[in-house]
Image 1 (cartoon, one colour):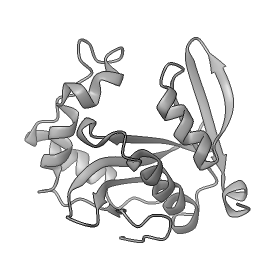
Image 2 (cartoon, one colour):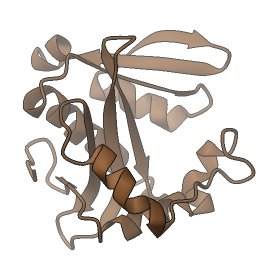
Image 3 (cartoon, helix red, strand yellow):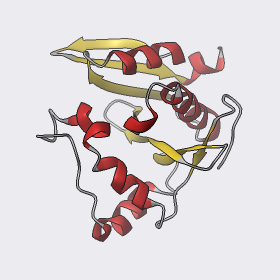
Length: 173
């Protein structure tokens, strides 16, 4: 799945088990994971030992449209710059999504490009009906790129904002 119509710098790359070393590095980088510190003190980092790779892989890879996971891979040199994902949330009849760009590659527009690739995959390939993401209201860049990609705010409470995009809105852009 290396479809590429919205950006000329990135593609979605479904990782092999061996590629999971990048995810391990991403999740253990305090600069990248700082946004996550409130949930995983003190620095937001999440342990992802090799012993967990097989079960994680079996749960996340190859189960579309219920869940999807991919790396953001730069076309020019094949470097992984981040990850994107979504999974079905049955109680809301939607899919919760996430995007993480490595701190080393932030500020270069990869977050917006990766979000657009994820949205395209969700709506055009997997046919999901609604993507949602929530995060702290203090994360201005995350908010800005979601809004620029066409998400709308649906809830703001206790310092958390929830945004969504429905398939029909995406298709009408």
